[in-house]
Length: 88
Image 1 (cartoon, one colour):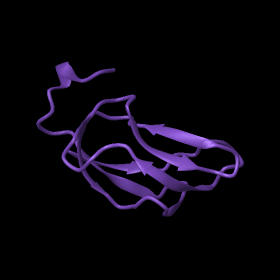
Image 2: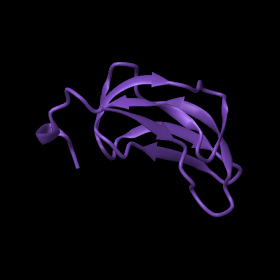
Image 3: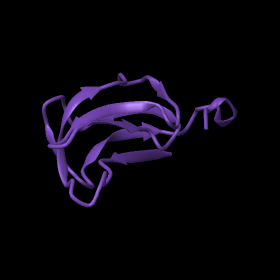
């Protein structure tokens, strides 16, 4: 199953940020809790962790793009991943 990765609400005051680093490559496996990308806000740099286990299918953003809470960052494919080998 494909699952969209959304930019989460980091705090009540943070509504957007700038993507400064994509930490995974297309086709690379990611596990729950691993850092997928980094976003810089007016307050700090935040490492955004994956909430799912799967294979990175695509990124809909590039480094330097401004994102708003709820924006689609990319897609993870949960099919074909050994859930038993997935870190929790």
